[in-house]
Length: 476
Image 1 (cartoon, rainbow, N blue to C red):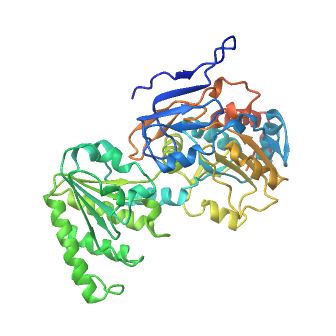
Image 2 (cartoon, rainbow, N blue to C red):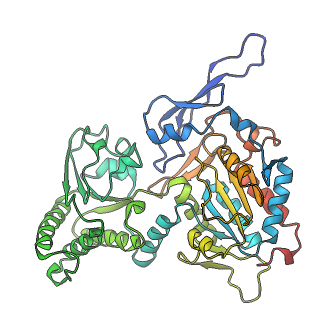
Image 3 (cartoon, rainbow, N blue to C red):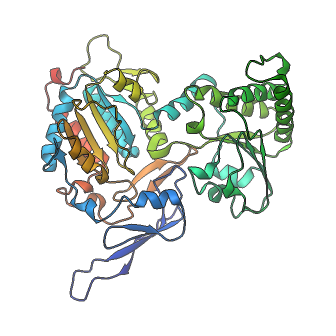
């Protein structure tokens, strides 16, 4: 990918400093969706707002409403009062050094931010969980138990002639999905939507035939549907299955429809099975993901097929991949300090025990570090007022942090792709995309302005301060 230089579109008045009032970045990569579209033209205006000229993506347009002139004036705060960055860092380090069981939550950041946060977690024995930890853990459990067959956006665009969407309409969450995978291509394709009506965004595509099967399925039917479909793909006799959830007539009808679908998969040149982990019914989404991969595995015995999981929003895939590199274990892992108690495991992974909602409900943590560098997700409502919270967040969270008052440290941070560079994993998990700052400044701004600071920089400074604490104070 080529990132052209930022081009000034207007200049300052004669005699003034030669600083552009607005600038345009071509081939900009959008960080607000895991598709990471890299063909965008974004303009940074003199009032620090941003606008995109060559797309009508509602998700991106909504995200950009959070950026404006007020960002540069946003300051750190402690207990509801504005303070200098150094004061906020000192208080945050004090909270982490005193905590015996802190949680690093949300974690909406990039590769560099995750690397620095992992080092910080090792200094205070923290648990790591993402804002989208439930969906990410479901996918991870399926991968650990049975493996997975995944494909890429490029493979979908270049080779897939049959796309099967299981219970999802991609454009609802990922508006440019069809732009990235099908639009502008000449190959004939078939789009089959299982358990839902067709995605309206697909209706205008050329050379595409669209249909829906089992569109009125009950919310609990995905398990029964995939049980039948798995049996068909394996060449087993579905009649041996229990019919506790489906009447005999429904079984026969569903069976015939799925047999016809499997025959089309066998005849296709390349089939891609698309699903959204977040849209699968909880709490057993991992079983459905496992079944989908099992169908693809069986189909590969006589044809070619792959899965495309649409997920990893807000850096979830990026954080999970990076933590796995660094520790050998995925998210929902506790990292013990080097000075841990004898006999304590250096790492402890548990996708159920280390779930943010459960930890808060059971009162198992004594400090929260909430990292929200993209469009701002607020911390959980279940967070007790007395629980110390450190928020490394988008400036839009400043007011809520001030309102929380006591036991709250807020430090505004840059958004990767807006005020700083960075790297994110794309939705297909095999491509890392570089991000360029859409508006000037980033890390080159004065260190006195905390908006200039990335999550990586703040986490690194906190880790350095923890390193000056006596070992007994950071021992879990």
